[in-house]
Length: 196
Image 1: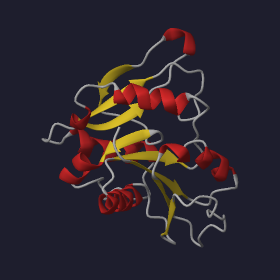
Image 2: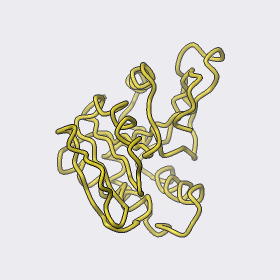
Image 3: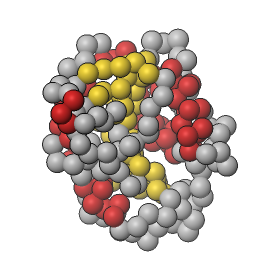
């Protein structure tokens, strides 16, 4: 893959966020940490020079911070954005498999998002792909060029809607693009369901 940034959106995180971030930060050039807490979190994120900290001091929901991250990616000319939840992490070896799976996909530039769908380790030896119109946020890769072409994530459902509906609203805009950006799930064999 080309230049990869990451984003994690925080809302009153606890100290476990540090270990979660450490499980994937080495795979990104920069990690955008967006804090939706008010007051802002007191956690010290100075443990890595890869971190770009954005403090919103307000709960802006999911879509607006994702759009903030896309704008930062555009400034730094990043190609892909890894989106993570504050309570998610990758186990050792899982991110390598995921990146390898994505890198081996033909016409990668035509895909709007890649996401994960974990199954039992004994059911699959290699990755496979399935086109979908629903995907979880955590562990997804967003194609920055396609996100820019369609105007990013839909911010009209910013709060006061359950998270499942927010995700459906966010991803319906990506799948409805006329620019050829499909969402693909990379199905990996794993017994880990940390990202589900």
